[in-house]
Image (cartoon, rainbow, N blue to C red):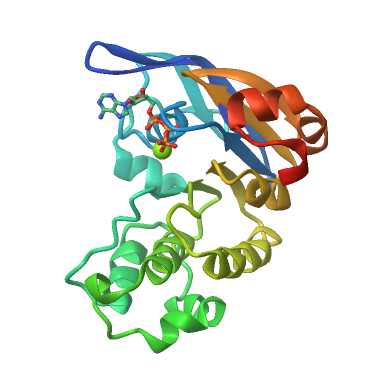
Length: 237
Ligand SMILES: Nc1ncnc2c1ncn2[C@@H]1O[C@H](COP(=O)(O)OP(=O)(O)OP(=O)(O)O)[C@@H](O)[C@H]1O
Ligand SMILES: [Mg+2]
């Protein structure tokens, strides 16, 4: 069953036309990757879905209902949570307070203790302020903040960006656990091998248009696409 369907959206920043008729769909329980290099339109797609930069035309339906035009907090409340690329952890609030706040915004949240079980590292840091966390710890908190809301759709915008390889490995293992439960995931990445490890299907976006849509297996065979749009060779993935 389709949970989220994006149909021919056009999104602008002022007069700058960034997304050109982007279409994408997510079926219940899938992990789908949105791949593309710097400035391709990955974040703008995520922002379009959550209502931060609503598309000027086209439609986005969630469980069959149009969500374009709804306020971001309403879209969030209905079950779509974004882990933004800049993480946006509240710097002066503790880890625990960050989770409490996220939980308040959700209609059917999980107990916070479940997040500490999932991320033992956060359990040890409960009383630490956001500003004192490392990049990896902030990323874990940002993911936990989304998950505590028990979203039906989890949007992860370049979660590996800026993280040390060993932290990327931790994040991969943690996300494997999460995605085996009932959540549908859209994962944007430039780290192609990370995305290939987690997703079963992928879209490649370039200059605001989708240039490939298919299985990860198919994409792995497309050396042309990997080189042209993702700047990686087949050996690297
Ligand atoms: N606030 C903004 N105002 C104007 N143009 C913007 C704004 N944010 C992004 N853009 C432009 O929109 C295009 C798509 O950017 P977007 O951030 O969606 O790309 P991205 O795929 O997420 O890139 P990255 O991998 O660097 O995060 C780029 O050309 C970018 O310069
Ligand atoms: Mg981005």
